[in-house]
Image (cartoon, rainbow, N blue to C red; front, side, top):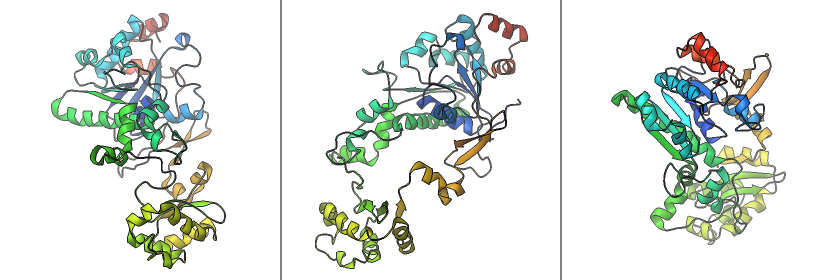
Length: 397
């Protein structure tokens, strides 16, 4: 196959990508970036209404989600298109979809149907609220999941009212968890020889990401509240004014607290009866933060970061996104990865956040044009030229 692979790590797997918008493409991007043979199956243009799922193909969001894969057109609602898809399933390892739960049943591509074609197939499904239950048929949306999943109740300043997080965290995490589930099922398949149905939802992903805040309720009966920039349990940790802006400081624990006090020239705070223990610093956090900020406001952010790093107090600047990509450590990590478009121009993507020493991931292909690889892929799956021509004639592809 002439199509370049992003890595050798998952190169033995073929993935049929039926996803749209964000959570599903986030899942498939993980597989594509580690070398899986990902085939994005799209509705033929003459059957689309408007711009199609996910908006314009040339926007940064779509482009960042759909690199390292190929695209074919296929009408799954037609008998010929569905039959062609099932032939692809025979040789595939994974199918990923994020339709509403009933859609795959209506199309006849539910797990039980796919398993009859290929017992080793792994179906990854992402929904808003789950594949069954009272909310099964509700449409899913990231901000709805943030609200129902408890996140908006603990985000923002105390008394401000619910605040959404600045990224679609439920969508993104659901996609990542689905990818983890698919990889887990593929590992298990090496033992059993059988695939599985991997299911997750925006709601489940968001609840899981509450982590210790959810555990506080389940195990201690504590309902977390908005804490703004203050860490809810590690104090003093938060945002502090400087001469030219703000910085983050994290000084949990007695040793770190003493280092901080000495570094800002306020050693008298160490034994102050208001702040002499973690419990007292928590109780008097507003006064404690004010005492720290009275000192940090006298120097610039860069000066304080230099001072704190020298004495081992965790701290850091608060960047805008352009400043973040300009940081020397971010540049060193190489997470902004360039790739060449077919016309030779350069496009930059957010690369993978983890590395493998022998089989690294690269951006080897910019997102495909819609249906760009239709004939190429069908031939690879054993379709004869006459069969491909018949599908074109029927406007199935």
